[in-house]
Image (cartoon, rainbow, N blue to C red):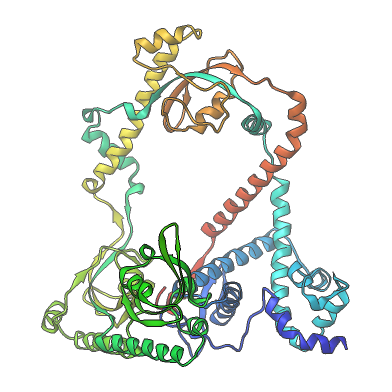
Amino acid sequence: MVMTQLRSQMKVILWILVFAFLATIVFSWGMGGFKSRDKPGIIGVIDGYEVTYEEFDNRIRLAYDNVMRQSEGEPDENKIKRLREETWNNDIDEILRANEAKRLGIKVTDEEVAYVVQNYPPQEIQQVETFQKNGKFDLQLYQDFLREPQALRYLLDIERRVKTFLIDQELNFLVAQCTDVPIGEVRDEYLRQTATAKLKFLVLLRENFEIDSAEITDRMMRHYYQLFSGKFKQYPKRQFAYVKFITIPTSEDTLDIIHEAKGLMEEIRNGADFAELALQSSEDKSTKSKGGDLGWINYESMVEPFSKAAFAAEPGEPVGPVQTRHGFHVILVEDKRTENGVEEVKARHILLKIKPSPDTRDQVYTDAYNFSQDIKEADFAQMAEDYGYDVDTTDAFSEAGYIKGLGKMRMAAEFCFNNPVGAVSDVYPVPEGYIVFQICNVIEESIKPFDEVKSQIYKKISKVLLDNKVWDKAAEVRAGIETVDDMEGVAKEYGLKIHVTADSIRVDSGLPDNLRRDKDFLTQAFRLSEGDISDIISTGRGCYIAYMESKSPWNDEDFLTLHPTIYNSLVAKKQQQTLKNWQRELRIAADIRDYRYKYFHDF
């Protein structure tokens, strides 16, 4: 009986499992999606571990399936690319952590993994109605399900995730063991949360100081250039000249869209459900899932052609196709009203965007392909001129493959870094269509010439000199202040203003007299006792000298009461930051070879 019930609800169970995916589904990824390979190869190598195309593809499908369930809609091209990137980054982190765990002697046995899988399933599984009895999770029902043959392929993924989780727990424990927060940081946080104060202060803002350009000599800059030449390293770069073949809708494409819109109009007039047609055909992502429902709209809330047609229509009357800058619309007005003197209509619509048809894309690709073949043995610029094509040239780009104006093109970059000047490419896809290019410049690794980085060096030296100038002047001012009574005379002597805060400011409060918020200054100032004058407090804004006029009294009892909570909170934040830094260091030290660009042309 139980097995029969489980089998009858298998679809529900597997649909709820976060880690389930439909391995038999063939996705139509569209342009910029997966590219088929007869023999799935290696998508990348992470510290010696070869990530196969097959396992990477499986995890992408899992992520895709999760998005489909959560959003009830198919992810677009950009979302699919983000899913690939997130999956790759997760793979890197998981593999590096596993390697680090092995280095540290951390072991998770198969028995431990099996025990967790069998006895402590995730909460989302425990909440499945089929696994519950009398409103509570029933472990026996769940374990019976795990014995079903259909559960095997999902078990493999569950076990991998559980193993990763257990390893992470061990690593997190090690981090926790070596994480501490000094008492000073706990006191600062306590002050931030509880203390109030009133301050008087002088400030010398960096923005009010200038450096005489004569102070920064050519000799000084050249000396800096020689000392820090590594800062001005020029990495290898390439440039190419290219012709772009843009895929834009033809008049025939537009006529096809109009014909489709008229077909929808005919279906609606014949009794078809408008909302159902919108769900099937509309390309307006914001209203598609709602059956095209726009709610109540006024004339000004929509573009002119849309509003003109909608407000002229009678309730229940379909209107269209109506062309706007967004495409062609089929509109159904359901009701009309006047609210506060403003006429409104309740409407639905179906949007059909004007876009290139597959035939148009094929023709543009054919034009690009023919040009790429003809150009192989000819002069690139001359042949482009003969064809009537414009030639553009990229900025210099690195092997990472980000090309200004074209986006990320790792495959194109690989071609350029592995071929000589003059080599002509095949056809490469770009968001607007396709390009064919010729390598026109090779820039080898070197140190950038002094003249090229001179302005950069000038700015760096200027900042150092400016900081010194502000500090020196602040030191002069501070030397003249023995007591708070001296502040007024010193301020007058140096043309400064004494700023006075409100009576009960906090560490994260703003500053008076339209000064910009400076938490670094207030954090240090709040360490003063009532009646104290600070030394120079230097921050990114300038230098401050503060007098603590009044301050809420320190409460030892309250501090001791709150100490554990504050300490634990700061420890948790520090652990999280330590883990992030540790993961980043693992990546820096790792040997990561990314071959995804060989499988995804939009990479």
